[in-house]
Image (cartoon, rainbow, N blue to C red; front, side):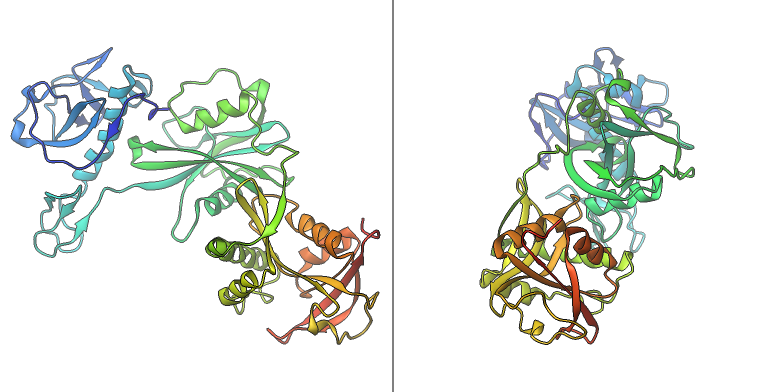
Length: 442
């Protein structure tokens, strides 16, 4: 990719005076100015008024400077297409990264708060308003590149109404309040109408052409038909690995994700190992994110009351579960896939003593699962948790809200039988009570 330069990139802020031979980056509307294109060579400080040059960074021991403008009739233009494949790669990367900073300097000449002309900080890479002291730092826009995969195929697309007409993956910018994983789920649903079941981080890339930071993910989706949003995409379709063929270049994260998949990388191997262990105290922030995702999932699937009205479960309750050794996580590798409460004894859940409109199948000691939630990264987490709990206890009781059709469907699929109605302390809604004895599961 463009950042793979095999040289040390030092972007720390410094104030330095250029030497006559130091390369200078300057830009016109078509791209970067180049003394020659092959090999890529830039103008030097001797070609400019050195007092007007700004130090940018160092690559491979070579200092790069930025000029505010370039003569319209001098030097060749290295455009985006040229810079993606230009040699040496260190200079191409310098031009692309300098483009990011040039864009920032040019678009922040005046204070967005009071309109005064900005000045450059002498202690950090920032622009400062001398009147109101508003400080502006380089803009970096996070965006996701998404390799949607299913059954040995990857989803590719072509943009609608954009100059670039080549092969692309789904992509989009992170919105306010979103994690990148949430962006993956939203963009896939918006652009092709498919629901994501698993997400896996795959790498990142600075993309100075558009002042972006690209975050790559693979994801799996539920079965369904592609429904293309033609305001964003001209088309979208599946390709098998053997249909991909040669790729345009190796500069972009998009092509890196496609190439890795084409060459046999399997983002979601079928034999991926899941394990259950006690929750650690330092995992509490991540656990609360999983519960937040679960509340959103419930609301989107017709169940906004069970946890959403009170933002259940509260953090202090989960912290107490952890301290008591009752909180467990489901893990694949180092990734938290789910969380739940589990206990086993003769009276594991006092609220189950009174059951209406029925009775439990047995009076023997039982296991109980509460507050089970999936991170939404892998399918089958709920099933794995319940099968694990049943294997520990031999007899398992559980309850769920009448609106939680997803959980009711899972319980019946595993062989649980509905036994009656119980009530819980957190709200006035009744709960459907289910149980299952080991050996009777499906």
